[in-house]
Amino acid sequence: MNPSNSNTYSLFSLFVLLVLSSLVSGQLDYKFYDNSCPNLTKIVRNGVWSAISNDTRMAASLLRLHFHDCFVNGCDGSVLLDDTSSFTGEKNAGPNRNSVRGFEVIDTIKANVEKSCPSTVSCTDILTLAAREAVYLSAGYSYYWIVPLGRRDGTTASQSAANQQIPSPFEPLENITAKFTSKGLTMKDVVVLSGAHTIGFAQCSSFKQRLFNYNSSGQPDPTLESSLLKNLQTTCPDDNSDTNLAPLDPVTTNKFDNVYYKNLVNNSGLLQSDQALMGDSNSSAMVNYYSKYPYLFAQDFGTSMVKMGKISVLTGNDGEIRKNCHVVN
Image (cartoon, rainbow, N blue to C red; front, side, top):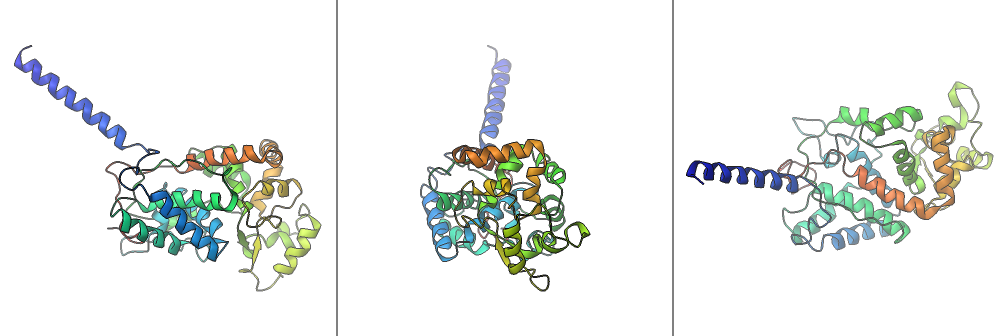
């Protein structure tokens, strides 16, 4: 082989290696921190357990925080960023203001991770793991899934994007489904991920229109089960009660299970967007299915969470590993 051919071959080999290296580094990996931060899962689990022990609502809050992060331009930790002179963050967007919580839990976990593995684990991966642990600690081993890791943190946030991209409980099902499909998710993912409403609470403002003046009729929503309606009218009187709280699942409020779907079958869904799943033949069939088979819901919930956790992630050399989840480095 003449020298020129040899040089060409060497350059080609180097190019192939660089491409392969880029592809590997650009993917999420189930063992991403096995060597660089082997105690990561334990640290996150302990942090979430401590938070839930102090406030049972925190399990749902961490799960919702992860959802609201991923639905705004991908899972990049943007929901954690404070406002700066160059961008207005997502914390005060309509779906998040005085509603999204759990930032201090992520901060505490991040601080403990930094002590063990400095500048190694992204805030986005911590939030993703915290959401999984919140479900696991609220349900047990049947609701456990392996989380692929290696996300990096974004360097900007967008209040306007949060206002536009996060589904609202007041939107019709077709609008919500469209927002999911725009992220690469499906109608099945809509039904499955809505099952997260088996834990947590909602402010009266998010469903009170169903209690007194549904669709400007001057009457309650006729589909709402009568005993639940009476209880909710007591919790949320038609005056200054917008910030009062009601459980999304009044039957097993703090346990992650499939009772959410049983509630929908019984016309006891709290949010209009939840009960709307029974108004579509495809989604209602899935609701009935999950109401009968809790282990299949557990399996599919983990699958959909992994799918959601991969939305437009930053990997490889993109983004950064924030030292403080509130600010860009």
